[in-house]
Length: 159
Image 1: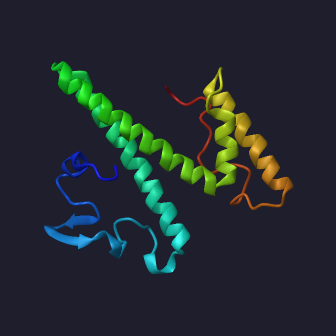
Image 2: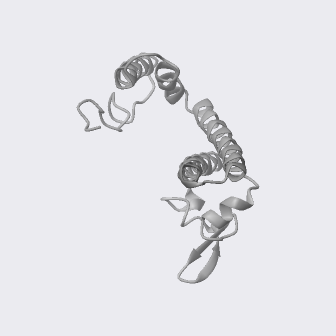
């Protein structure tokens, strides 16, 4: 969502790097909107990681907003512009995801077992997580309290 004027309008008109609360504008650099822990206690690496997680979420939201707009827009020229803009959001989403995966090898290993594979997505996810966490355990890496990534199993989840 870098440099796009469309996005500030989509977020209620607020300027990038600014947060509106109770009618008063506050700098996003303060950190209370972006972080769940005091920003001054977080490493620069963790703050960057959090920013990219937020950006990934924003890009996914924008992709969805464009999809909704495309589904109701009758004007072909407007649709072409929106389709192009949606493609830019997808590119940004992919770049954000790649950044996070490069800095989180366990996530990357799991993603490689899921993405671009034919067959059952959930089965690939379960197998990739199991294989990756077994590999981490063998290398002596901490698994955050268990073999699961803490996201729960999707088996049997309602679709």
